[in-house]
View (cartoon, rainbow, N blue to C red):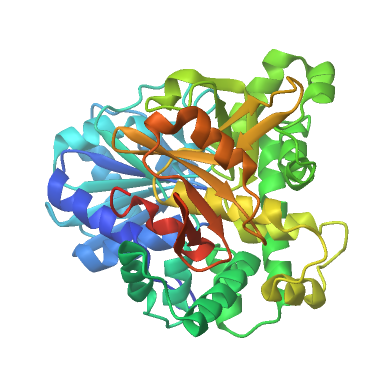
Length: 452
């Protein structure tokens, strides 16, 4: 890695360390995630710290000569000798990590993992962005020796670490005890969380913030990432429809309807093609698809409606920038209003995006539920539902006032027997409001720490 690469503390490092200990060379690890989320930096840092020898083969740059080494997977010795010549390193048995970076650009390398792992001499990590199940692995054998996990943008705790703040553990204590924080600390944490929402968790944007750059300069960093995504979408979809779906995400959420509107798109490309394109977008890891469930109980995946969904960006900082793409660069005043909570526009859908991001990073899949009101025409909606043991926790997100919460009340009335505890996420300090647990939005990531 270059000397100018900033390495931030990431929780995923511990995931890789545990994989190395448990696997002991019996599996490879595929680290998936969107572009610029920090995959290469993470795995290279891990390799340099945990192995005597770490080499990275970047398939976005590698020569055809190196690719030709993978032609004959029955001759592993020749392949490994060739990689040593290419990297100018001598590999050490059981103390070498070989990283296949951007492996989606050369699926043959991914297929080679089976033989390489069975050979047993070295460890292997792959990284991949925009991996398409249909387009990038067609005709190859996916190795059963491959584990995988998704690297998400930096969460709020990692954002605080990057800024030299180690106080997050105090927040967890307050969450677990449900005693709340003192008003001053709560106010400070809300301000920091609003900064986090404005900046997001993409390492480049976080680095710009840490270095004291203006929000306008940080916005330019985020716009360059968005442009990269749209260019990538064009490579897998020449029609530009995937990029259109991505860009329309804020406008769809701001309409306040119960689903992502696709009718006019369907008329253009057809429903089957449309769903395939949305699958490609979801596979890119740049968005979070929040699926509607017909029966909001444990085992929600069994009642998912794949054609009825909402969509969020995986990074709220990019989402904020996308909200103001009508200007060349978002003014600092917009960010000042966002950080102070005084943005003129309703912040509700920005808060929803932040909660979706936090729940996803905490390991939850995104589900929501709507049900008809007594008039048979309008609907109640619960923003998110997560499992809790053998029960569920419905979640309603409030960006300002926490009353009323009619949808959550009606959900409790209808599904009370399967509810562990209903949750409201807002700007207010943690406390019980009747039977509802209100938690401040900066504590969302704690929801997986113990059964509620």
